[in-house]
Amino acid sequence: MKQSRLVTIGLITVAIIIAVFPMFFNLGDPNSEEPFAGTDASAESIVAEENPAYEPWYEPLVGELPGEVESGLFALQAGLGAGVLGYVLGVYRGRMLPRRSENATATEDSQ
Image (cartoon, rainbow, N blue to C red; front, top):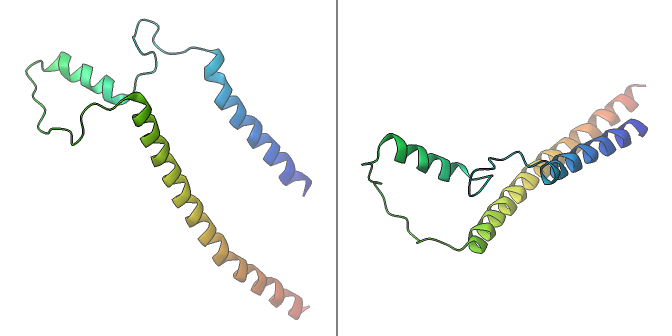
């Protein structure tokens, strides 16, 4: 029991370090308008450099969205993904509990 508590504390500490580290060390591109630009913006600039005559082959369904809406959609996507992941892990854990109790009962009966 004590070892699992130490592992839990260690993992929480690592998560906090990962979350706090970028706040104190600005490792982005200082010359860029957005130091931590997403891959979409980076890919767009590379395509513009390599092939200036490139024409997109599709039109977005929705025009340019404000930053708040984009952040909200990203948070919604992250929340749905976390919910699906939690559900799947719970289902697998629920399937394992009866097997463990059957194994424990079988070992007690054999002794």
